[in-house]
Length: 391
Image (cartoon, rainbow, N blue to C red; front, side, top):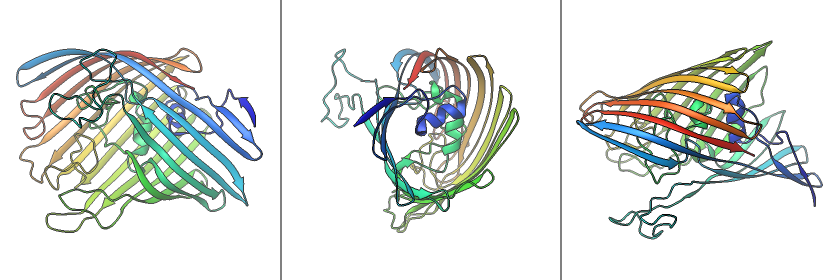
């Protein structure tokens, strides 16, 4: 088997795509080639110190943590080849974390306790986020089968500057693998989901994707029909200017007593000129669950309505990017009795130390109001410092 190291990108994974979207450099892979087949290995690791002050119902607490950011660690194995006119790809990705809630420093807790009282688990988790294969051609498009990032909400999380940092962490206390960035205040989390999707060829900057997704249980009933997600995207570039416009939807239906249909729609735009980039996004949902938590189909209050918006501006000075973003989600109806809102603002500095390492500093403020989700209201302030490596 022939081996070679690469200094450029051979295969753009989700993580490499995120870096390109944020304009903070490229991921680098090691490749092994035999005949017409190649296996790439690439990944990322991060670590942050965070200091967080939280106030709710008149009670104020301050804590520190050594934690992952919005991204976990990641190791990817990507197989590519071409056979009988088809471009073929298979991707296996594992996402471990550095966090471990244990009473004994350096030792994991009991992995079999299942969250029982007095038994803290999970310890450092390994999440299989990518496990799929795809095939297709530039003439008719690509079919993907397996587990990968969803379509609805995909573009906005890859445009969130806090993807390389920490952002907000109200719903991501230790020992979870990641914080939440701006998830829950501006958009909902797309997630990594079992799916069969079809993506069209790109024609004049225009492309589209649609897929069936593993049906989710909500409202107390099992689903008998798969979920459906779709996305349309248009990219344009000319001189030192670029633009992207996208729209997406998600739909899930159930049957049985107390069940309902869930629908969501999104629209986003990104515009760049020189070293400046702006992002604007909004979504509207009914029955997707609590948008202020950010998890699709988490519906303890039955058929709630959710909506949100997100704006961001960044500017790059040489090897340093500075940015500010703001977002808000709002939940009403269903069994909710109040107008529940969760909003957040992040100011961030992202310095490319070299082609592998980015150093990150962020200041984040969160505010949650509404008696159903945030009894006593919630105010937080988080300062985080750390770094991330892509290889």
